[in-house]
Image 1 (cartoon, rainbow, N blue to C red):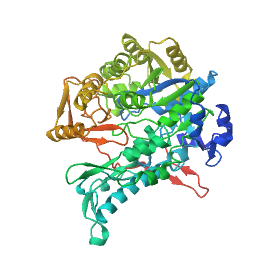
Image 2: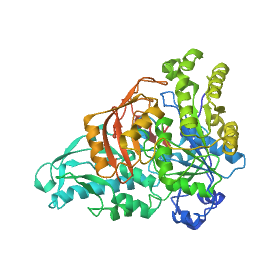
Image 3: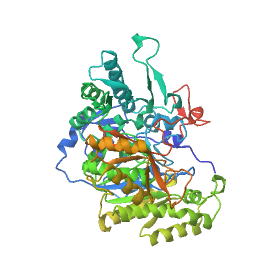
Image 4: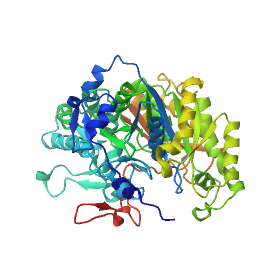
Length: 559
């Protein structure tokens, strides 16, 4: 059977004017800034008007550790939102913006899939409303001001060898990871080692997503540490007087982007930090606004629950004062068989033994959400045609033993209709489920204690090995007053451990923290583990090779 591609489905759907979508959830025309007929930014002052309104119920969608077989977390989020809408609930979806790096690299588009997508799909996956470009411009303005300060006499005494602020670009470009710039004479600056991060891994992206309003944004920008002086004191963006100009570049980017699903459910798509190297959640601004406008808000956190959900709960919820009403953990039978040792070619064949070996990965995520964080959870099995009844029953049986019901999700093929079973269980959990939400660590814990808590409780590891460099940096950061900040773990997404080859639920491992750094503007400490990179590279055959546009401007190949 031949299936339509995601982009073909998206292009064949008739969208409604965005003013009509806004009206469904009580957003007035005067609060919209239109970007064509089907996209709009929403004025952040609306949130001030709604501050006394009761919040809706927040539904977090997360997943098992990702595999080449795919899990469908964004697709499930969109489909669940559409299903709740079909059931007569006032609902909004809050997702992240895709990055051009993965779009042109391996992953392809990030607007959902099949009949559970947000549209206009091509716009969302490409330039959208220009947020990524604004973030890159603000980031690189600060970089230019750092180097200019040194060139113009270096009044602050910045040590060029200790500059921590990197430039960024929204593209997978390994050539830019480590560079030397300022060459060819005095007129071109001071020669030094430098490098680029991908925009979505930048601190500016994290700051945008964790800012509560424009004043909060400026405060966070002011606090950015760009490097250190010759006598080892931190230098901030505020000392360079950069925060005002940066905020001016970001003022429109801070406004949430309103779009719609294929079934015309309102959706905010705003902010897009990676979850393996950043905190992996959409903006606080979008989530809080959605909670004021809707009775149910479906949001997602990147990659597996050990990364995206952990950071959503321990960082975003802590900063924003949020509390999820229920959690959806997405899995596929195919991906679980991969965790059990099956190759990609074997995933379509029934294999209960391999499935049982892979199931512990899912069970650990259930344990984390329900027992460690104290939240009610449901497992959404993103159903594939090759899944057998025996395999589905085995998953259901094992999950129930861990205290979580299973709901089959067929939203990829059926849209909202395929998510009704899941939606019913989500509603039940929000009304009847036990909710004893708690953080994994307290603010007062030391940096090492916070990292140890995440590794032992969330990853299931035996402890942490800190390199001498990491220990030294932790001591310095605590002496500078950064010890009370939450921790953002930079770790492989493919395993609960820091080794991407250890699939399933590995035991008896330790995580090595090779270095730490402070993102003082964002408000967290980054702990770097394994071989994690802040600038990805393109694969041997990048998705870009398949993307094209015809003479009428119609795009093809975008997933």
